[in-house]
Amino acid sequence: MKSKLLAVLKILVPLSFGVFLIWLFYDALCEKEKQDLFMAFRKADYFWVGISLLFGFASHLSRAYRWKYMLAPMGYNIKFWNSYHAVMISNFVNLAFPRAGEISRAAIISKTEKIPFQKGFGTVECWVLFLLSRLRYSLISLIFLKVNSNRLVQAIAEIYLFSICLQKL
Image (cartoon, rainbow, N blue to C red; front, side, top):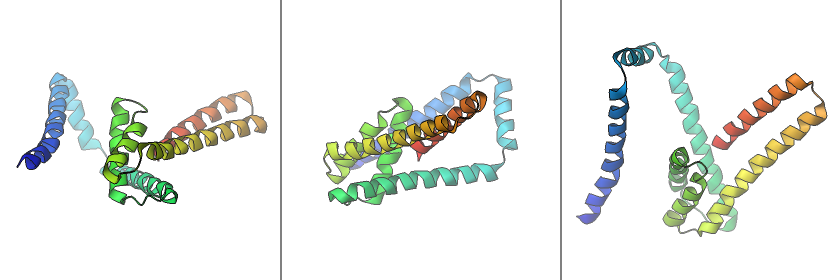
């Protein structure tokens, strides 16, 4: 009985908090802002919303799959859905506390799959270092290409944005 109540509360409390936050922000809008909000929902092209949701979901699945196979050479065969849930929870943690998601991902997989925290965290940080090295390589390549200064600034900005997108993958 106690475990069922706890399971229900784990779902009900965050859901209630989310509904409360939506109501709080909606209630703070003036009448004109509410009309603009509903007009934006009416005008939205839901085909593109669906496509973006599909690609976003695929990106999270690929991150979970990649992490599962980064742990495999160390002898840890984790369940895909545990890896997926750890990735998704780490994304939500990053919204509140930037860069804390990596710690939470390793902690979650440590709890669910009995993998030592250090090994899980090491694989996460290994991937972050790989992304940073790719960014450094791209910046050095740009310098050696000797593009003009205006184009260089634009290219650096594009690479920076691209690296942010890669971190989400």
